[in-house]
Length: 260
Image 1 (cartoon, rainbow, N blue to C red):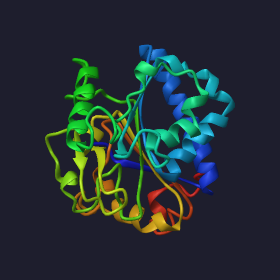
Image 2 (cartoon, rainbow, N blue to C red):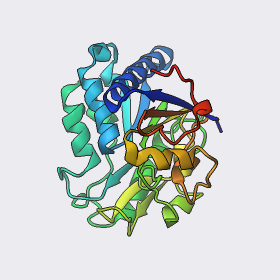
Image 3 (cartoon, rainbow, N blue to C red):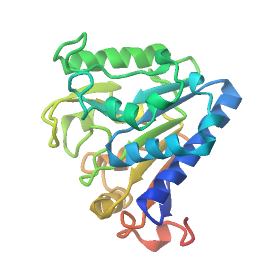
Image 4 (cartoon, rainbow, N blue to C red):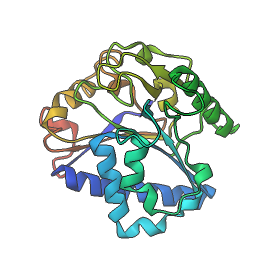
């Protein structure tokens, strides 16, 4: 478990651009060291804002997109191409504009795919894909992702792990079907906290006044069942990337006053 580091940016636009620059550097460094990199994407306004900023970043061409593995932290269990699916939004923000290897883009199944409307079967299939990609050097049945991105919801949810929800209590499985989510759509697929914690680095993104209470709660020692974001951390680094509005309820001593 790594203690969280907090970086506060002036506004959400600057936060997105700075996070994109950080991510490019991390991917390039991993590819230089190992030949490939792996990143877990997140949806939502901050996750998509980061991808859009990455698409516009001049340094994006430093990435060898053909040697990048992409996974998802969660997905809305909706039909293929639905505009609310995280994959659909990621394609629009970035993926369709870079030369990815389709075999390395690991999409969670849609509700009209090979598993029909069985979200649990789709989750099991994604867990199997993760296990197949994990090597002997990895920590358990998932790859050691270089960076796992998570948006933080106003209720402290991350991925599709909601406060007090059964999926948040999962300790064995790496991927679960989520039923009865308090935020539409009610059926989803999500990585669990054990899978999230396999990542080398976990980056949590929050911008806006509506995220201020969630950030303060998660960073104040709340339990992970009540505040799932508090249970999301990386093996070597946990990084909270906030704008000033989302950081407004944090003690000033928690982050350097000179944060960009």
